[in-house]
Length: 209
Image (cartoon, rainbow, N blue to C red; front, side, top):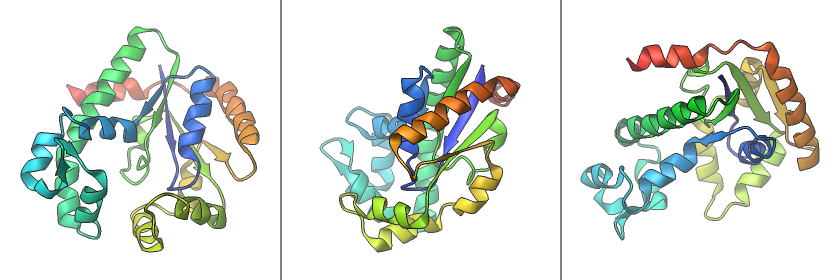
């Protein structure tokens, strides 16, 4: 089973690209959505996060806005957050891969925002980077509810520059023109996947032993 890593900096159009891959029949694992599920009432991350970030727990769930403010520009708190959430999210991803492999899927999309920042490209067979111009990126991000330029710049500072991501990509989706154009590009990418060997899943299994 081919593992396709889908990534891109904030505001580049990665989430919409994931939807377009799904529309073409490829199962998508959404790393952000998995974390959201961990934060919801009854989610596995609520109790452990409550021990270290009690102010972020509201109505038995994690308030992501408050949590984000608590770790903003605080590397120590961010590391603690990641040490709690990443293993839980990793198990969810493992379960997804096992399910799709058992179903006989030939390829899956792993929608992982920080794939390249975490130097995890060796855990996928193909890297797809979604990109657009800095002007379009900034406009999209600042239109989000609760977003400020300060927060945008802080997030951007933690992400690998777009130019470096493009250099590491096997395929690039240019999201600057239209959804229809991006969809065309994605169909072309899917047709090109047959040229790549599926090795990453076996690498993952070795690491998980």
